[in-house]
Length: 309
Image (cartoon, rainbow, N blue to C red; front, side, top):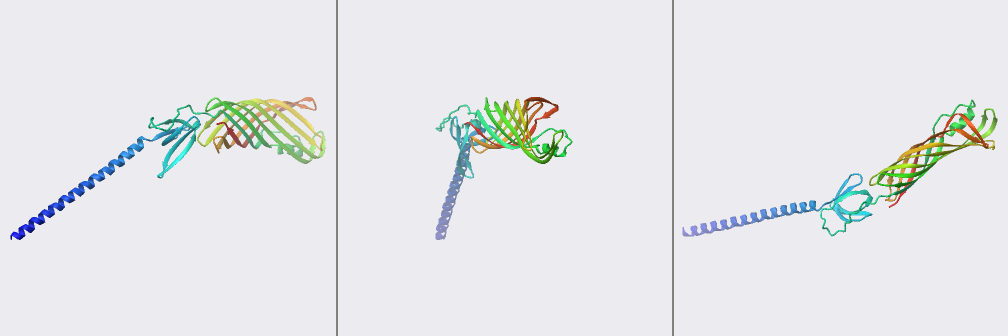
């Protein structure tokens, strides 16, 4: 009986020791779990609090770590899918930024964003001559002028901007065509085996330019006023007859471009050149047309442009 009591006491003591050991392990497990959760929350809070913010020119926001900012560019770091990426953005694309830690060792220069003030573009494309030509009574002669409706177009423009959106420009553009028709009858002149017709209109004028700039795209528009220089040469059987005129005109267009780099871009533009003339010089004499002759055209072109840094 005494032995049983000793065994029982030993068993109870062992069981009590095991229970206490389990309680200690459980408490340690709970404490470690709480510590891990607390550390994760603290790290997340620290990460969120340490996030800088970049606001782009078109209103987008980028949460990141700003490494360096100067007058020409912003260097920053973002985390995507657990991988740190380092990027550089031209300063003129940044409207504003927020530095979470002003005391950060990263060199930050809070200067005014540099805006590209100079832009030059050159375009080539298709133009369609507007206006209706009067019927001459000769189908072959009228067919010659109808062929002249489709033209080759070019334009060059030099722009200077006062701010991010508005500036002035010099616009120079041209519309050209050259067509040939055989067996042409010209009323009151005679029949010809071959007749060639060359048509040129050149516009030169100052312009008001506007633009909207995003990270990778730029939309621009312009309206210009100035003279139209018209020249048309009719060559029946290698005998040229030239008529010229100068008239007041207007040119306006809109375009969009993709920035291949901060300086170079390619794009498309469409617009109109508008004007008409009544007085023409032919063989040194002034000839007045019965009705104003349209010098207007619609154009659509592709172009490349260069912007200063």
